Image (cartoon, rainbow, N blue to C red; front, side):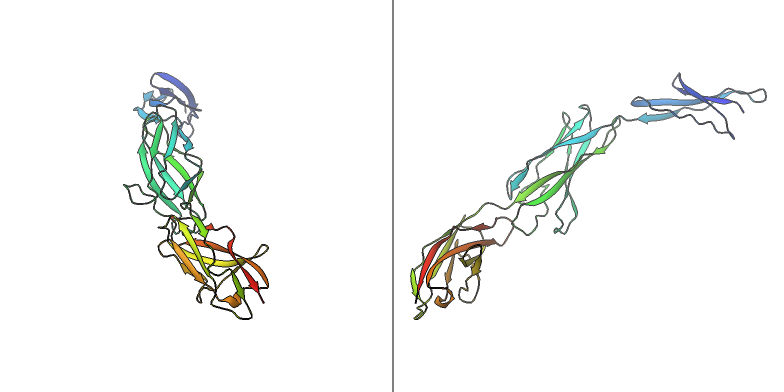
Length: 285
């Protein structure tokens, strides 16, 4: 029987009746900081009053890494800077950045790195080429299309601020731009009735160190028919060039055939590219 009064230091928080020896007082909120909470039993005719030992309760303010600053898209090898802005501005602690990678990637989530908050900001600069200092961008999928990386940040919290996570932001990573040029055919006119050795086509990639293969094809209205270049459709690049010696009988005629080339990179460092239509040949009977 009786009631218990709860104190925050010397300030009353409220009173609650005893029920089976337990008194419970809901408290809507406490200001951030340390609170010395005591319970004071008022006593009854049969029981004397008493005061509990103090319980130190630490209340943290809410904090949010709510804003992420990063570019929309970067090319493979470009420096990229990821920044989280934590509020309120007096927050301390660290922010850890994460990458939820595309479904085709083997790792569902990768930790990109952590940084200490300074002036409400935490910044890391992952190395997308993985040739510099850590933290290094650990994995880029094997495709030349720009791939979405879902970036989010987790704030650790500090003695006065609660930890939190930011909303996710999408960053696209694309291969380095390439340019593919078609050279002129070594033979501009061929005869299907008396086919000579096929015309020789040459495609040149820029930058020249880009590795991969080139597919040559006949271009029609919305179509691309690959040519067989010495039995293979995909011609390896050698010193920045791919050469196709196609059989004359492969070309429809009579008429003109437009030839186009497509570059397929062998790594994520470079992006696909397609040449302008050119290097045409004229097929006669």
